[in-house]
Image: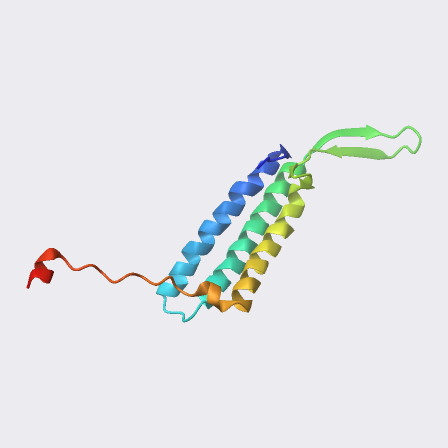
Length: 136
């Protein structure tokens, strides 16, 4: 797979993977807290995607908020401000990736709600008995 980025746009990828790790950790914590069914995993996906989207938005805003150059247009006499770009990933500016990540998280949750059989636990094989127990 080829990655095409400019500037700090590559930060979208590790933030997205951190979102996935956060989603799994939060889902396990909610399951261990005793919430029934697959809803803890759905809720954790939404929460993690919103957190990742907010993080991407604020990082992009912090990077691109600085004025790099200020010029005066000789025809109109108005100031023209040049701001630093936060970068892009696959030609999409970093600030828009915040919305894409949130949409992906909500989409993953919608798929889980629509098809609960995807969330069935994987059956665990029976525990093998030790040789001492089998010989008795």
